[in-house]
Image (tube, rainbow, N blue to C red):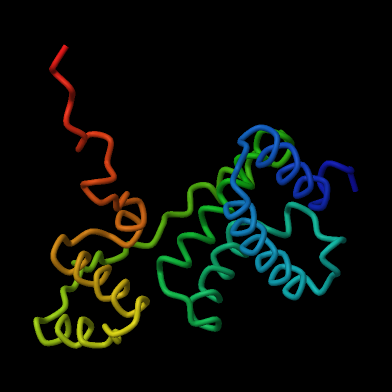
Length: 187
């Protein structure tokens, strides 16, 4: 067995060199890729009846990856979006494999050719007036926190802003804002 055909060094270089050093991937991306590839490795090890550290890149061929993706949907109960997220991590890894191990180029290309599953985009749903009223009536407006929560909910309901946008709003009273000061034109 050639050292380059074993899976472990390729996985290690993918995470250390490719994701961290070259792409400067976020910790969330690294964790997502790690979880997806971990599931794939465990699945392939069980299928090959070998320990994960004994797997070779050939143990992750197109058929195994397709069976894994089907397993993700059927046995783990994940939807097409999660399946596609797993496939994205697998593709990223196999692009690294193709660049790092020319002997595995054929395997990598067959895996990279696996198509994503089509998903149906659902239009965002809106709350009914009754639901908005129920939300606005929930905070106790006799307390500072209740007033805060009511104000935030009212702002979201009336503007249609996202929570992330609402968090970024700088709430300054007009009498505290520097632009509200009256300029002195007497000179």
